[in-house]
Image 1 (cartoon, rainbow, N blue to C red):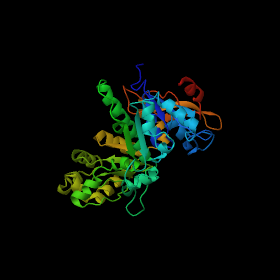
Image 2 (tube, rainbow, N blue to C red; image 1 turned 90 degrees about the vertical axis):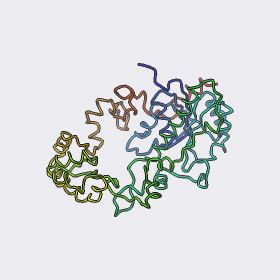
Image 3 (cartoon, one colour; image 1 turned 60 degrees about the vertical axis):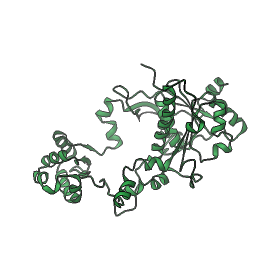
Image 4 (cartoon, helix red, strand yellow; image 1 turned 30 degrees about the horizontal axis):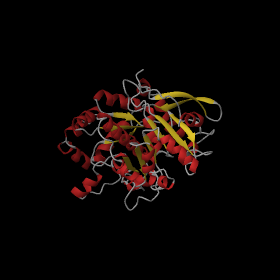
Length: 391
């Protein structure tokens, strides 16, 4: 097997929870050596999040895969000095503390840059490192609201809903990893160029801004047209027909039949060529004006057939559709299996060792997921190894 793309890169992860550890996971997935610093005795709190049995959650096993764990008290003088020694051998530092925290411990970007000139510092926080809210705490739940996403999720006659995962944290982590790679790639393209100033090597990721960045034209639509987007349940405003539809067996499917040509094939497949030919349904804006009528016609058809028949009919017609998958559906899915997107390990779950599947590595390089090298480590599992080999 060829060396992984980020082999030789060393990363010091000082963050907890989900955002910075997601950045670390992405870098580790593609070969970076990621050293995760955890509080002595307790470690990262997600070790016990959604812990149904045993001592270590599957969330930790997933988010911190392919990493090494050491225990270190960053608030102590000894911990600070050890962290700076570790940073001296690293290319990137990841952190997601409230702005000013690292500085109060003597581990701010200037100290890190003194330890390793040219180091890249990825900083994830609620609102960024400057601005009137920069000192405020915040988790993804708040960022998803402030960033504009929460107002768009849920049914229009009910309070805004959440997506079911900490999507704000995950987005921030992805941007953090991307930012680190941007700086490193820029330097690699011209190794003779002077090292960028420290300010250009600080990647400042705000949770709310990461969320805002995926709200598409939410703000431009408001300013250009005076539109205030609203919650539309399973729909997306202005796009039709695209929704979840119930099937005869109690399951549901999602169908995206909103392209003009796709719409005509869709209506033919459900036995409604009259809708395909109607002059007032020939583009998205016109179909959106009649979305209730269209959804009713589609569900009248789908609700009289089992899910597999619905999906087979739409696939034959070239209409994008898929099941609303549960975890059980995903592990049985041939497409995921073909690309090694569920990878199995023996894991102690508190009542013995069980075969547990974990999501594969994205994006795919080649024709299938890279193999997960190790699951999230035990607390301090690599302390002796790491601290013993560092100066």
